[in-house]
Length: 254
Image 1: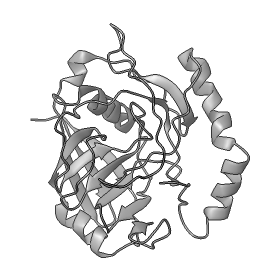
Image 2: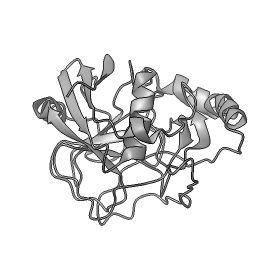
Image 3: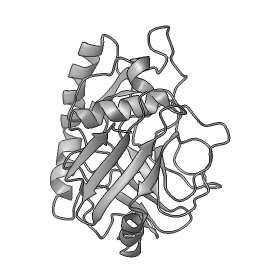
Image 4: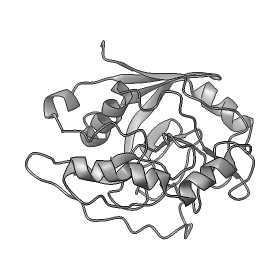
């Protein structure tokens, strides 16, 4: 997305005013201090169709150390900041599923912990701290690419958790229906925003796939069928359905 997308028509002016006066950036300063490094500014996360020029996404080089192969580094904004993960390889290897409870029904996702351990570890870290509870999906596309984008607690498309991390699992990446992958603002700028593909979608292999929908594809397809408002461009806007995650839960019993 090229500009912030607002949570509702009645709330856009309030959100715009908050962004104008730098409220999210002010909060994000705490993340930089606690992380001990100057936070990077990756910009709004998005998903761009294959063959589309899209917005300029600069990104940054991958950061790895012996103790942090994932490159969890401070970033702004830091909306609903929950801290910065400390990678634990043993916990990262544990398989899990996630259930998103929405007004339209439940969506269940199997996490690809072996293929994308850094991403699935971050995702679990945020879920276990209630980060996604009561958030809603802010973007639905119905032309050229077929995605439902979620994970921004501000509902604007510009929000983030206060850190970013490296891409992974991109070699040969494809995005068939039921893929769950990270939205980003360029290389190695993953944060909290992610998307579901509700139909087979052709994308450049730039978005880390980290999950597969194993239940609730009918829910995603109903949301898609109900359409969006074209506020970004034709076939790209705010979902007509209010896709709020009442709560998001981890299941580790296998």
